[in-house]
Image (cartoon, rainbow, N blue to C red; front, side, top):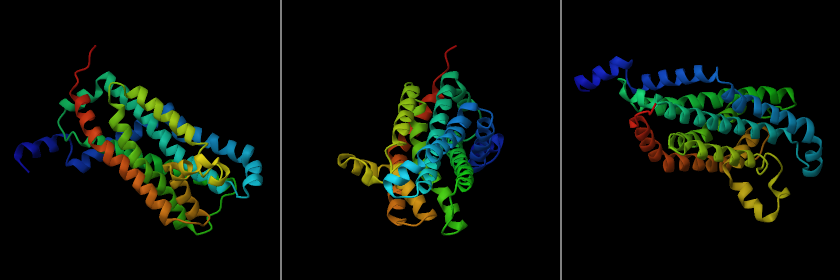
Length: 270
């Protein structure tokens, strides 16, 4: 490492991993004080789980023949992860508009630490939310038929999916039209809450919708978690979830880097 690069890193507090962790900690502290992030990532999924289980459980169990709690809990775990990422995207766009990203550009430190730290914070938030929803699920009747290790593995599945989605959100949120794009993505996720295998089995949907419902990323993640918690296929839906997340990351990774750099170079207008 050159002397100038070493000075640059030391000025901001160490190497790229250290700087990324610092940014992640900053974001997690800020999110804990932002009502919109808490509402979308925790309160709304919790309310959705209670509505599903207390209002729709008997009806859907009777019509589908499946115990709904093992679909509802994985579904809201995924919803919490994805909606939290959308809320973060909205906050990121506001940072762009206020000029905060530009101020990060002129500060010493590795500029890649900001998006990497954001991705790390998203993973931590998604895992904590998943664990909280699992605990509520246990209170509503969920049981870990394959032990605690499989339950912990299930809590990491939303993290796996959010890696790709957060990369997409980071790339799109800092665009000039980022607010509109992020809001549209949020609407798609809300629509997906009623068209996935966690809501009702795929056979309950109309024939033309079944391939879409079965293969969309929320369904593959739900099927993976259901297999871990209650039994059923794990490997195929897990690989499908990995493929979706990797696809989002590859397609939008380069977009995220370019749009982040462009946003950080844009001087704020006051």
